[in-house]
Image (cartoon, rainbow, N blue to C red; front, top):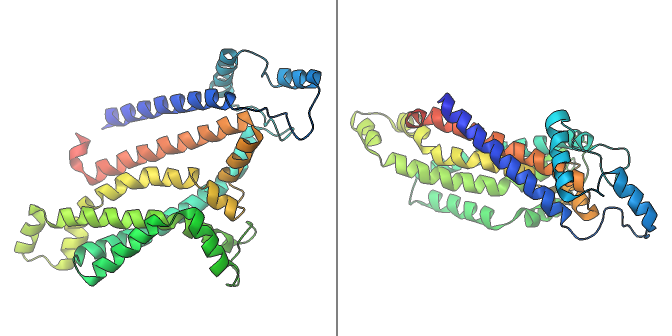
Length: 305
């Protein structure tokens, strides 16, 4: 088991290296320049700025210098647009916001999706099953950039305490979390239903019924552990996607998280900030996938071998 986890961690680190390297070259291939604003700067000023940030060196020299700074000092460099601000400072300020938003959105998805999927599987081919799955399909079809403005107009503008923009009170997180977690709750419900249906039709469940086990014991003790395997496989990447893919929702609700900084950095051609944010996202994905592997090994003893 330990060898398996070490191997998975090594694969994750390799993926992280490839992801960050591709980002480095793609970012430097973008048209434009971070120092070209509304007013054109003289050529000698641009040359001094490029020399100051090391952008006048060759692409491979910049590449090795960038990885050397990360591996030896954990330094992602300064922001090219925000003078005197380090990329690590921006990440440290914005990451807790995105993490809090992603955790609440995932909690809502799990709390609503798993019970809905279990109920749909237990009451399969009934009106309850049809209603729950219809709601799940609707949740999948409505993207977050459509749901976010709808929630802001219908609830944020009329319900006291809720807010359509900002991060100045505890209830500000509710609408963005719902907008982010709705689609994931729908996916969780469908995956849970499929996994539970397959488990409920297995031999060991029929044996438990033959021995006189009650409905509740069959559902919660015998079927739940195996039925959640497809859902657990989805939750790890989904959690990372909630944090890394919240650009639109954070922009709609003006949440000061990583997504908003990523959008602004892309528009401003802030090379170092884009690379630092992608590295942060990559670490989250590797950790989430590793956690999924651990949970799957705990739920399925056959994977421990």
